[in-house]
Image (cartoon, rainbow, N blue to C red; front, side):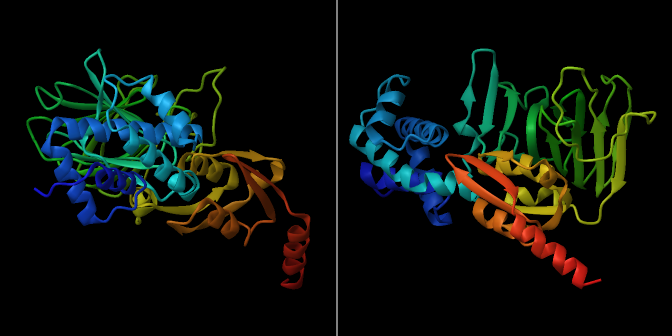
Length: 366
């Protein structure tokens, strides 16, 4: 194996974490990580520093180093390299926060373990994460999502717990069904591909089956149900509403008056629900209020509406690797909005000149 200097590897790690490494560079890094436990530890510690820098917006190398070095034990010895990587990180932070195209893709050996016997993998806002479990099952985690599973995964059973959104490509094992726990549902699959959206703050748990078969076990819900899904089925489970719960816009109509809190339909284009794992975003007749929720997760920002009327505007279209500003400028083509972006906060309001322009265009077109 080729010998690399500390500086060369720190440069490569920064390229990888920013989503700018080529396939060859990624393979080079994976080989280096596998070469020794020290290399792996260094990579994981730099990754944590990178994410901390992105979360706090702290671009000062020395202060970022001092903050992180107090938390890490044993202390890293590549001090100069650390400072350099943090400086490199600063040049990528804005694309990381606002670009939405950075993909952090580390393999499952980069997990974090806890004392309660669980492995927890998180995908921060502003990024997606791809992992491979020990049985060969591939998982893509969307921004702001968390996946947990036991150290004994793939022993007696294959079970994971999801908070957020994930796409699963399950390795076939008829003796051990793969189970996803999402809210109060259990989603069981063998060899199959499917998407589950189950953010804790959302009203719904949404399951979309690409291929294979999936069983949804809702026996633990207030209105118990069980159902089998076929390819292209799209199932929306309506969570029970609590009095003090802050509810966000739902992904489907309220089914609270139906015999079961679940609605199912067949969809022709499942890519609408899975495009996010490839860095794309397909929108079909969504309100700006709904878009804002995804925007906050995808770009790691807070969206503030200064005019409530904007929330009701609906949009359709496909965004392919666009930055936050590009997305907002595209939305301006069909809605009279203006925006400002400052320190991770997006403020949107009505642009009166655009509103008059669109209104006049509609009148003249009648």
